[in-house]
Image (cartoon, rainbow, N blue to C red; front, side, top):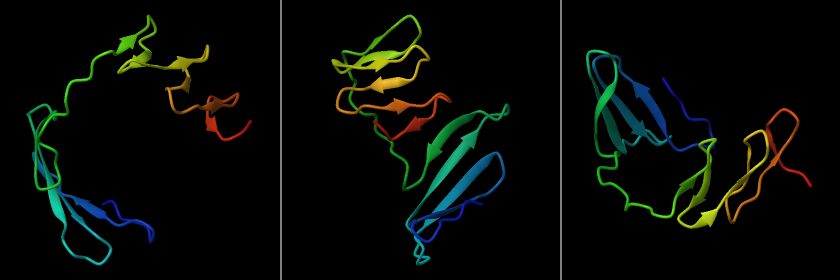
Length: 108
């Protein structure tokens, strides 16, 4: 069971089985929609459905480049950079800072 905190707008309840349903309700308990999952015999998810599941694929994105470390160095033609530890430093419009424990932090 996943419950929303006071500042969140949804909660979910997972039902066990080879077909799983998750219902989404706002804090006011008005039903918004559901998400369903189907699994194969090995437990791998093989199907998704329900009102809240996106069923159409996004358009293909070109201009994506990966380096030898499998880091995404360009997405849609916008460059990304990494530090020697593999932490993302910039993805174009955003910059990131990392401390000695490789945790993202806000700072100079």
